[in-house]
Length: 134
Ligand code: CO
Image (tube, rainbow, N blue to C red; front, side):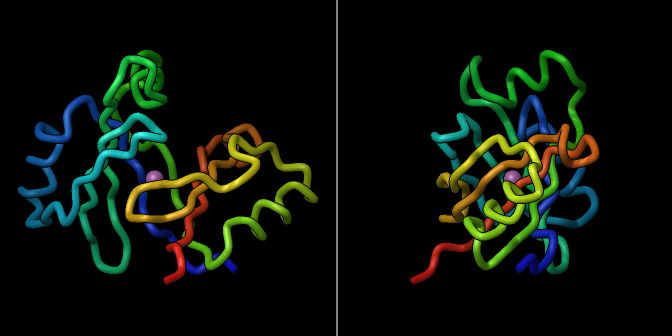
């Protein structure tokens, strides 16, 4: 079951540069983490019950590096938090929604995540994420 929007992902060239805006708003970076499986460095900024996730590429073949070759810095994806990514993926497969990840992969914050292709999601790259149990 989808619980809430966990975060909005924002692609940036430099987390250090982008953070200045959020700090000017009075917000703080709670957590910085490299996610090798996605070739990104992430910074989570807590806003009420949800987060902004800044995403910086850690390699030239990172999905974020490729995104920034074609697009400006800006909103990259929306992440829905669920208690069970695998069952969300099963439902989406039955609905013939195109997926980027057919099975969950490790994400930031010790979460299991999977991405839905934007072509099946109204143009919005959509992430599903669940906190690992235990
Ligand atoms: Co994300």
